[in-house]
Each structure stands twice: as structure tokens, then as C-alpha cells.
Amino acid sequence: MVFRHNRRQHILSIAVAILVAAPVICLPIGVRAGMSPGARVAQAYANVYGIDDDDDGVTIEDWALVGSDDEMEDSETDDKDSSKTDKKDETVKDYDDVPKYFVYQSYDNYERPEELLAPEYFAPDNTQFYSRVDGALKDKPSTGATTIAKIHKGQAVIRIGIGDTWSKVRTENGKEGFILTSYIQDTMVKVNSKFIVWVDTGSLVIRKDPASNSAKVTTAYKHARLAVTQIVGDKWYKVTMANGKSGYVPKSYTTRRAPPTPTPTPTPRPRPTRKPTSKPSARKASKPSYGNVNKLPRITGKNGSSIVAIAQSMLGVKYKYAGASRKGIDCSGLVMYCYAQVGIRVPHGATQIWRRSGVTVPRSSLKPGDVVCYSKGSICPHVAIYVGGNQVIHASDSKGMVCYGNIDMMKIKGYKRIIR
Image (tube, rainbow, N blue to C red; front, side):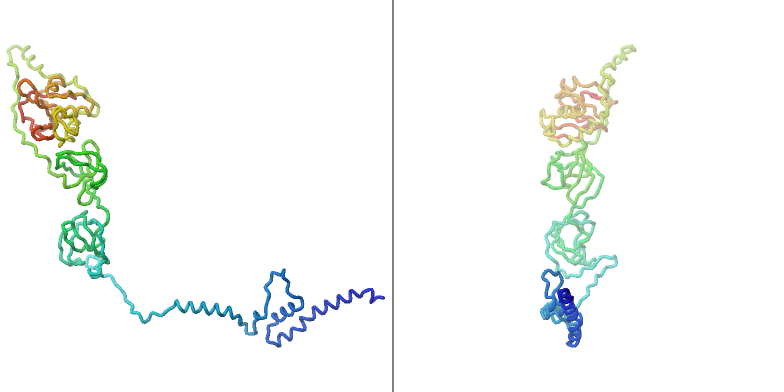
């Protein structure tokens, strides 16, 4: 009755014993067969329990088993490894049969590099360059070669050949030679300077940039005074005018020589227009022909020198009857224009300026900016602006432009002061 009562328990115990004993029994067999114990145990476990599809472990197949020498028998893996080895063998090559050369740069006594390429092997080029230094154009790419021509700083050249350390260039006059590549650059060379030039042509356009197609800033006329602040390349100046405007002008249309001015001639002091009398009261009455300069307008920061500077900026403007602008101007128009810049109104007409503007002053007290009025009969046909040193600036009909002149170029009617 006890056996019947525990029959199910006995059957379960026998089954568990068989499952546990089977791998242990098979272990010596695996060892005798030359397989590793771990591999045989795993195979026996799989044979008894089967393969669990839900198991995340790796299934060991017969072809994946390793022998006692632990060498893989995977033919596919061997193929992959061999293909990789073959590829490596293909990329690694032996170049022992190819000659090897070493290039050494040589220098002259001044540590300047010598060219390594023969001129016939220079790479062709056609690029604008500018000299960075005052140098020399050589007939060969060597510092010891013969000099063909001098190259000044900023000079434009065309590079027609590129060597290792030298370049072959052509100048504007067609000369070809060699120069160190380190001595040239592809942008204009700019050198800060400070000197004065004058316009040497009828009119000259001042441009925004150093190029003939650049935007126009303003126009300067013949004999206009320009202050150079920078030399750009070998063809351009950066300049500033008397009115403060700045820009670029071609060098070839300027000169460093000041405009010619007539040599001043001594002029006798004007005699009194009235005969002196023995009476003291009459002697005092002979001087009132001159006006009171203290009644003239005073403008802060402006004076006769300001008028002269404005007149100088008009040098070279063409003469035009009844004109009063930079497009064309006459003698009284020049006086009217200059004083208008400082806020003083002057009539357009030489006789009107003599009769209605300012006060009369003697020649002995002339100052820059005063107006010189000339005489022809009872009228005043011409006026000019006194600049000092017995020189005037006036709009000359005979010369066709605003220019310098001698104060005594015509008979003088009198002198007018318009501003204190």
C-alpha cells in the first residue's frame, strides 16, 4: 500500500537520477574521443534536453567544435582571414628597385635661396604681381647672374614662369628676367608718405579706389594742391585736397614742382590822393578814404587764410564768363564763391565788389584774403584774391583757368577787405 501510495514520487526520482547521471557517464567518452570535456558536456546536455528556442545563448553545432589543440576548423573564417591577408599582401609592395633621391636647398652668401629648377621647367603663369622691394631683374635665376634692369618698390610686373624659389617676370616695357619669388606679391604695395603734388593737367578725377574704373569722388583742376598720404603700387597716389576730400589719382597726372608764379616786382608806395595842407585839421581829413575794418564781420574759425585755402582748391578750374562754380568761373565769380563758403555774400561783378563790398584798406596793410581791384577808366574790370608775397589767385580769361598771378599785373584801383 505504501508503494502504491508513493508510486508517482518514485518515478520522478528515477527520472531525475537518469538525467543527472547521463552527462557524467558520457564524460569519459568525450575525453577518449579527443574532445574537450566542456564541449562533450555541452553536447550531452543538448542531446538530453534539446535546444530551447527562447534561450538567448549561442547554439554550438558539430562544425563549431574545437579539438584539443584549440584550432578553429571554420573554413569560412579561414577564407575571410586569407582574403584579408591577400589584400594586405597586395597593398604592401617592395620598392627597393626604385632609385631614391634627396634634394638639398642651397643658399648664397646672403642666405638667399638658389633655384633648383632649370628655367625651361618653370611652370607657366600669367599673373599680375608687384615688387615688394627695390631689386634687380636677372638674366638667370641666380643672385650672381647679370642684371637686366632695376625694379623699384611697387612696380607692376607680369609673372610668366614659376620656379622653386624664383619667378620669371615681364616688365611693362617688355623686358623679361628672373626675380626671387619672395620679392613679389599679388597685391599693390602701399607705402605711407607725406609730400605735396600739384595737378599737371586741365582736370583730374579723384577716385574712391586706385583703379581707373573706380567711383568718382570729386574733380581737381590744373595747379590744384594735393597732399599725398600714401603711394600705392607704382601708378597711384592717395591724396587729400584742401577741402578735406580724399581719394586716389594717377601719378602721371601730377607733379612735385609747384606751379610757376611771376617774380614780384617792387611797387612804389601809393601817394596820398590829396595834397597836404598846412592846417592840422585838413591833414587829418586826408586819411578817411580808408574804411573802418573793425566794422567788418568776424566768423569764428574763419579768416583771410581760410579764403586763400578755398581759392587754392579752385586752381585749374576753367574760366567761364559769368560762371561761379567748379564747372566754370570768372574773376568776380571766384571772389563770390570763396566768400560764400564761409557764409559771406558778395555780389557777382568786379565793379559791384569795388563799390559795395567790404572796406578799402591801404596796400601797406594788405592781408591774405583781401580783394585786389584793378582799374580801367572809371570801372573795375578785374578782381583777384591776395595770397601774400605780392601774389594773387584769379580767374584768368587769357589763360583760360584759375591760376596764380602777380599783384601788379594790371593797374590797381584799390584793395578791399571783406572779413576780419
